[in-house]
Structure formats: structure tokens, C-alpha cells
Length: 340
Image 1: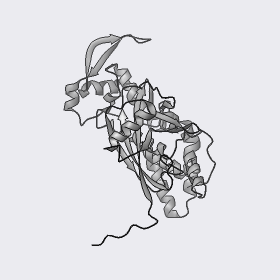
Image 2: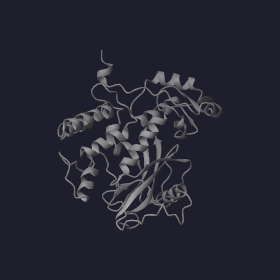
Image 3: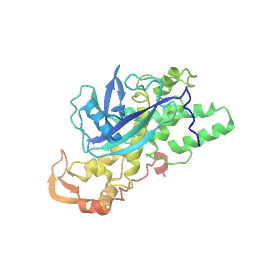
Image 4: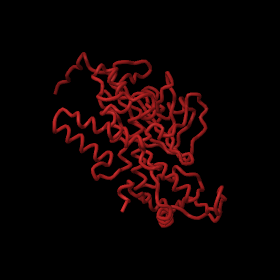
């Protein structure tokens, strides 16, 4: 076997490290972001330096602390993003250009937002970035009036019948159309379809930078379709939200996002904030009390209105015994599914 010479036109590969740090603050799910350049929104990120960083995890911890002054606890690797062109328009690291950027994403969960001392760091409500994902007040108006019509227009403009059928099938699954149920963990599927259909600002920005044909339809203005982010950071965040929502069902990760003591109502509001829709109160209470995950502290707190509420804490022994179990998360039902 002979070693072939590296082509003169070979693309340099840069490794970027991204972090999604997620919390629930009251009834608002939030992620830690940084403001860059002209007030652009980003996840904490930076290049992997093989001379300084012994591991990717050491590198991502360093970048988060440097950019936000927040120290991370437990983190897990989320996904590796390496699609060609995903770094458009210019995810250059430390001034580099012409590189193929491969991002290694990490996910961290915390019980509440830490104080941020860096001027450019900010906790953002993730529904300000993905407003169509929040169904707690019913079906989002923008989904019904703008997104679904935009997706339908994109489908109708398919170049071939085969492509049209493929797009329609993807839309049905992602958005719960034509009898398919809404699945909250398909966050990235919905965002990627909206990107392809030109419904998010990043699609226009990236295609302009790459000198490609612009999408069909109307360019979204400002934050009309959610807060845009640099590079493909919104795609990385959508992947993280989907991961958290999915893991709620088979891992007790919600207790990494709760305070040491909590009421069952607070626990329910935390779960609802994450999945983006409301649960039946009594069904949720019964499922949690039977889960073995929590124990009553014997103490109560007085809410602003109503009777005193019992305080609970995590049953560590029960959590250890049921580490491969999660919450009983119901399926979101649209109004037409519940009508008789």
C-alpha cells in the first residue's frame, strides 16, 4: 500500500466547540448565550486547540468560562455537526477563512440560571428563538398563519412529483400534519424544513453569502420568525432541545433542572416549560407520586394564593434504582383531537 499525496486543493478542517447550557427559570426555559459583533446572538463557542486542550471537554469548559464567566458542572456530548456548508456564511475561528468547520456540541443542565458577570453573556428564553415550539397557550398563531402556509408553498414549488411527495411526507411527520401527531422532540426536523423553505433569516443570509439563488417567498424581517443566531447555532440549539425533550421520557433528567426542594406544581411547570405544552394536573401528580423519584419533606410553603403546598425533594435511592426511567409525558393533543 502506498501513501497518496495530499491534493493541493485539500480543505483545512477546523474543530469548533459549542455549548448548550439549559435551565428552567420559573416557567421559562432558558439557554446561556453570548452577544458577538453587531449584537449577533451565539452559543458559547470557540476553536479546539490541540496544543492547549487535552480533551474536547476541557476546551469547551474553557471557552464557556472565558466568554460567560460561568463554570460548568456535568456536561455530555450532544452531537458532531460536520455537514459541508453548515458553517456558512463565515464561521471563521480566530480570523481563519476557507476552513471546513466541524462543531462538537455539548449539553449541560442546571437547576437555575447562574449569575453572569460577562457583559456579553445573557440568558435567553429558548421560545424567543423557537416561538413556534411553545403550545402552552394553544397552537401558536405564527405556526397556523405563516409557517404551515410557507411550508405548503415550498412543497407546491417542488421541481418533480417525487420531490413533492418527499417534502410532503417530511412536513407531515415534522409538523404533525395529515393525521400525524405533534412530536415535541422533532425540534430539529421542524427547523431544518423551515430553513430549506426559506422561512428563517439564516437561510437567506447563508445563501446570499454563498452567492446561491435565494429562497422562494418573502424574506422574514428581524425576529419575526424567532431570534436568529450566528452560523448554524440555531440548528445546534434545536438539536439540544429535542434531546432534552426526548430524554425526559426515559431518563430522570428533569431533576437536574429543579431546586433541592419543590412543589409538585413547580415540577409540573418545569416539565411543561421544557416540552412546550400543558399537562393534566391530577394525572401528572399521580404519575410523579407513583414514580419513586420524589419524597415528601414534611414541610409546606404558602403560595401567593390558595392552600399551603407540600414540599418534595428527590429520592436519591429511588433515582438510582430507576435511572433508566423518565416522566410519563402525554402526547400533545390539538383542539380538533379533543373535540367531540
